[in-house]
Length: 166
Image: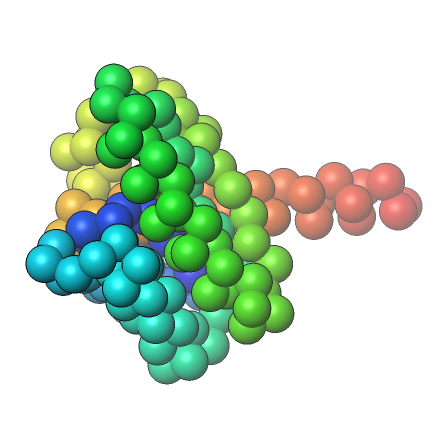
């Protein structure tokens, strides 16, 4: 199963692609989609949507996963992040992909083993779990962590379904 992980942001949205075969994870690619801060909000959202669409077209994932938005102290920033997240979720949904959603704590728990891990720990564990992964940016590392989290949750769900089916 090929998974696209997305770490949404209005300025920079990280993306990462992994393959999961049996219980093995394999790094495929990562990067970021940037929006031009000099443009209107609507134009920036178009840039994000089109950028994620290009990633989907190039790498043909089977499923996608997006990190849930955390609430900032600034309501305006939270609203803009939520709008960016909505657009980032829309792109894979329009492509017919199932889209999973995970809280930052769930992602950290799945990758590091604790929901209170710091960003650097997540990056180190992503590189450990995905040999050969260079990770182009912290946003891409977070996106790969989201993809890893989704792959682990899907594998667990599949094993449970098989156990119930016996």
